Image 1 (cartoon, rainbow, N blue to C red):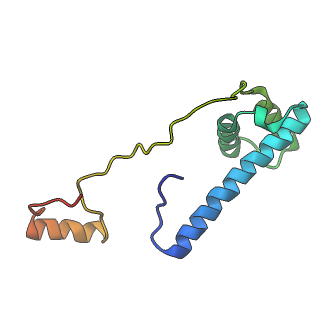
Image 2 (cartoon, helix red, strand yellow):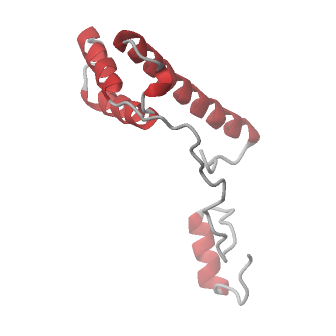
Image 3 (tube, helix red, strand yellow):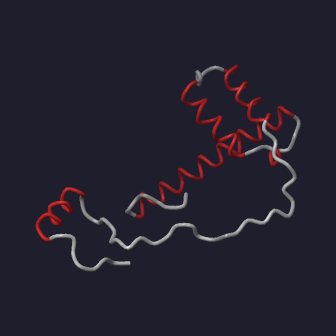
Length: 124
């Protein structure tokens, strides 16, 4: 959720809620999987659970209880190691681009470029 793709405040709020809903869904699946496997949820891999959930939604019969239990067992198979003292840099990776934002429909912007050219200076 690095960049929000919506423009209006209402849609940005909806997009944030969708991300939170998906995150909580994955964490719930991890908690259920850990309860069945007899381990702690923080011992399971979030990325592995996310990938299994996406694949399960595309390929499995969503109504099947056996399919759900199989997914929960698969989530519990990928354990993470002891991550105590792990240090990750909190730095931005996205670099600013020397172009202006596209704030109008692409067809209209194309017509403007054909009519007026690209312009001599680029905004930072």
